[in-house]
Length: 174
Image 1 (tube, rainbow, N blue to C red):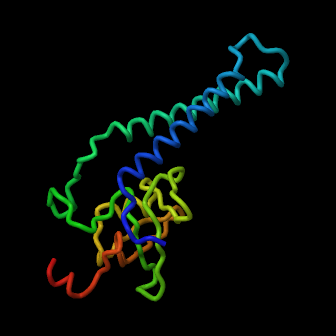
Image 2: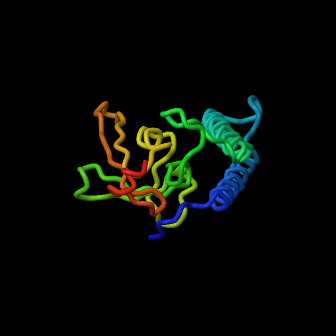
């Protein structure tokens, strides 16, 4: 498995491919949709309602991905400590992250990406998930906590980001 950052170009390409797929699904759903009052029996009306919901859901996701593509690529959100630029190794969308949930005994590696943009066989953590939100802006060596869906607070250690590992030496220079 590669330890490099998923490039912005690869993420943008994945977004565009997913957008094309969603637009094709929406076009197919629209082709099968009949305006209210123009369908036959109750079963036809139920199918039509389901199609309307599907079209609405597809349009919402299309809009979300289009907004992701329109966002300026150079946006830098301030870190929690007030610094405006992000140092190398900062976790962001597209980062390959290695974390430990058990104090370093075992590690898990994944990429921070929207789920439908998963590239290859990589495990994915979405940026909007509790873990994904907590990780954004973190650096190797950071310990972060987040609240899981079951309301349990979970603490993880960031071991490496895009191949840059935490070492005692990097902690002294920070």
